[in-house]
Image (cartoon, rainbow, N blue to C red; front, side):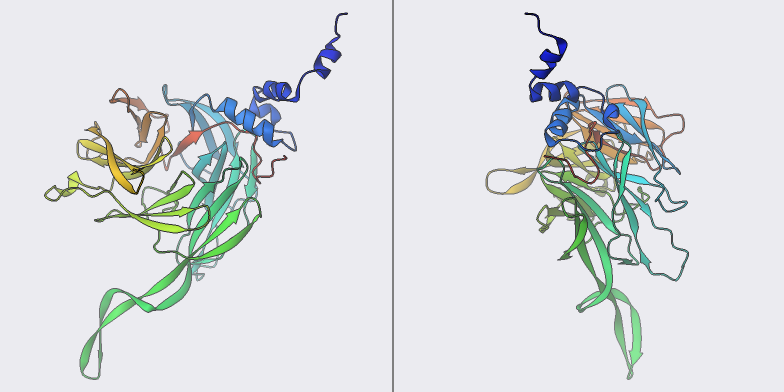
Length: 391
């Protein structure tokens, strides 16, 4: 007997059905209210076969996101994000991407110029489904723009936002650098600046709330290349990393999913080298195929360091050293790594280095150029922004 179409569909296994649906365009599922965890994993695995970048070439009143194939440097409009709850006249900036979910921030507008506390709005967005989620405000930060780092758990729907802020409280047992002198009882005394306390709180997608996890050993450095100067970070192997200082020996701050902090020294260069042959201001953290990497761009040369474990301890190993066609006056605005490629952008061009062929390619930027660009590896996803994937 010939089976009817209905009978054939009825006998189709759940896994087969999910496999078929996982190959459907992610955009076609944007109106689904719930997504099963199994479907989300299948869809991510399917989308992950095609490596791409999510790129925001320039900040604007609306955030225009593009997908890009690193081989051709051709941008294709992915989504436009402009949530109604965003602070008026404040631009959004993308700071991370993972499993198709991106994190963006914008400054909170405050008409009270006497207010010494500042903050950022933090957004979780899915460019493919166009869903956005505004996280609840954290603890106000005293005269210090909060540092943000985004981590992702082993569960496909789990993410955590680490937020370092200044409490405004003075640490009495510590003193800052000398800032002058004062005269008292016929003698001059050195006047020292006071040291303020910095703490960290973490937002979890599983709880939907912030939790204070205590003080931090140091704070991420301010980078003038970003509109939000302390948001530069990478997530590698279940840890968030921020650059703290580039001055010798230089430091990196890390935090794991349990909220444990660690300070790592940057790789040491031999004595006798010129300053431009050591750690430079053009140094960037990169996720190098699942390992912590440090790209140091020097005059006519670059070094790529990798933080490796030898079975007993971690240490820096130099992965490669090669010439760079980047000119001394060429300002690199953003850096990321995708597969075997390192991608850099200045205000007018892409610079792409292939670690296998050890060759550079130069491609012209969009007509508008780059203004405060952001780019990250990207995988299309149907994951909801609140992490609430059904079992």
